[in-house]
Length: 168
Image (cartoon, rainbow, N blue to C red; front, side, top):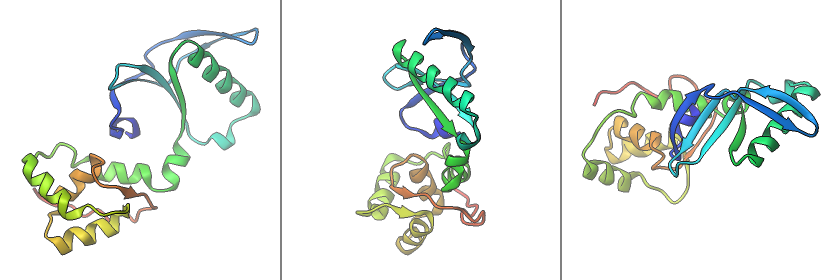
């Protein structure tokens, strides 16, 4: 979900390749969790973990070897930690806003709403909602703009009632 939301990612595949990693005199098989192609056509890999702080020294050393090997082979390589993504409300906010990603509005409607909502500093979801309410911008348009990352959002732990359902 996080990679799908990132604007620079063009496509995602799950466990796309198996590699024989040979580094520091050690050889082992690596099957990264996710393969991703960015908008420039560069392919990379993502290893997903729940909580990096709970990995053993051996697991961390293996991830380090993978990172160095993939980089040496010309691939981007990143370890994503779900606990970190969840700790500041990022993944929960993306999950709630994601349902609005497919809504379509005329470009001029979105541009007008963006001009009404744009602010010199990033804001929390609550602040954006209040600003939209004050300026008469429907929440669905706000959520589309936020999901598309056209407004700066400060992520915070969510109370699940924060994103109210709305109709187009």
